[in-house]
Image (cartoon, rainbow, N blue to C red):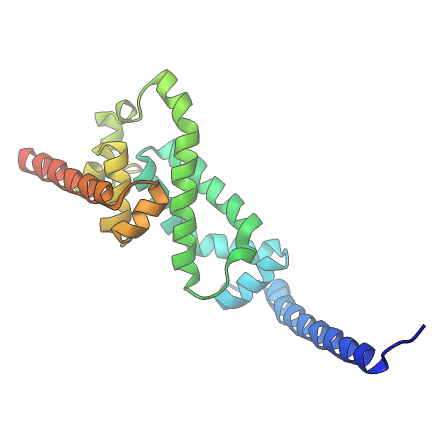
Length: 211
């Protein structure tokens, strides 16, 4: 059997280069794994998490849980549902962190993931909610008054908004998404997104005027 030695050597060199690259990455990751310092760079934590390190992932969780939960709460307008949605976000993140390619800030990518996962989660739960009561009906005056649900009057008004208007308002006004991006996330026309945002603003202005 004829063997092309030049081709074989070339392939071996390529394999060695890839192996050395992986060793360097694992060595860098090992430093994060063994130290688990709070001041470890986010890139190192992400690389470690991609290799399956749970300690590094936990540090990422600690750094981002606050804002992720805040977004979930604004979208859900219900504390219990938001807690479940937050858990779902980080479960999905653990499984899909390899999808992060570094072309944007990790926090930006994570909040896009959070928006998509949370809205998908709410839609899955909708059947159960509708059998018991509508989402809006679950938000009683007592719940709105709780500091754990709404720390400011502005938050209170957001939670009172109808579901789709609330989603659009939170994504556009609070999180800074463009209507073109929102239309893809929610599966609606750009015009519908703008209309829902206009409706949300009108309702909030009415509530603020009446209070």
